[in-house]
Amino acid sequence: MAEEEPEHLFFALNQEAIPEIDASKFKPQSPLKAHTEKVYSIAFNQVGDSLMSAAQDGKLIIWNPYTGTQRMVILPKSQWVLTCDLNNSGNLAASGGLNNVCSVYQVKNDLVVDSSQGQAELALAGHDGAILHCRFVPPPSGDNGSQIVTSSGDKTLRLWDVGNRKTLNTFKGHDGDVSSFEFLDTKNFVSISTDLTIKTWDVRSKEATSSRVAGSNPDTEDITSLAIFPDSNNQTFFTGSQDGRACLWDLRMQDVVTEYYSNAIWASQDQGSPPQVGVSSISLSKSGRLLFVGYYDVNDPLHNHILAWDTLCGNPVEEFRRPPPARIQSLTVSPDGNAVFCASWDKKIYKWLV
Image (cartoon, rainbow, N blue to C red; front, side, top):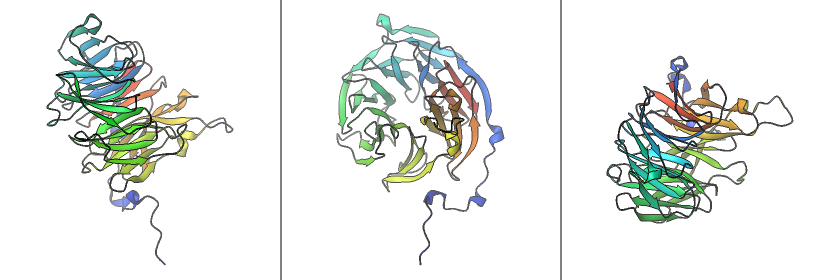
């Protein structure tokens, strides 16, 4: 009789031969402080010398991520910004939100740009719903900021020619808000939606190249976040969802390879009413060995925390908490892999050396 296959093939290896992770090197640093309301989104340029943040105070800030100094403050026409991004070199910044427009700005040091007065803005208008996510197309296809992709509550994604302010392609196929997407390479990207599907796209085609149903219950399994596994031939990525699970997907299998989940995050003093813990954001270390997962609880902020998971062994290795335990909205690892940054609803951007 053949032996049963392990439940998670990804973990079917000699774990004794895997070097242990030294969690003692994870050190909290001074947070970045300037916003006066909830911070919704943060993003690095590829070089890693600039970090952009967007907050409910109506400010977009370009930071030196390690000194904590502000390089530029942008005051957009609409303060309801949900997402932001920097191009490869960091000389272009983009944002989008509830006004259905993606705005692009020239980045200059030591300058306050008041877009409400019509200064230094390119407006990309065409979506019929809020801009939920934006990403510059990686070079060489994007030519360092010449193209950007946006996803929206109107169930579509769009590829834009930034300089000409024109839509080059509209990607249709989702039946719900397209909450996020990330590039697999310079031409292909993967998207997640409230319709509980994951789709892959080629910027040169209007049709999805693949589609996968990721759940059955939109109230508990809504996919909230996405991260691409590095150096995987663009075939694997991670998702986080409202049920508190982070999953590793393989496009060749069109299925989940394994799940990262701990019953400990569901622990509650009230045995009759377990907390509603979900994943708000995820990010990967430069090597892909560590998966950083931000958790939130709509009922109890004490459950708001970050776990660092060992992606090879499948276990959490370190927990990060910040006082006070505000909701974690956005996680990102610096391009050099030396630090993880966390945008929080307590108006700060937290940082840990990893």
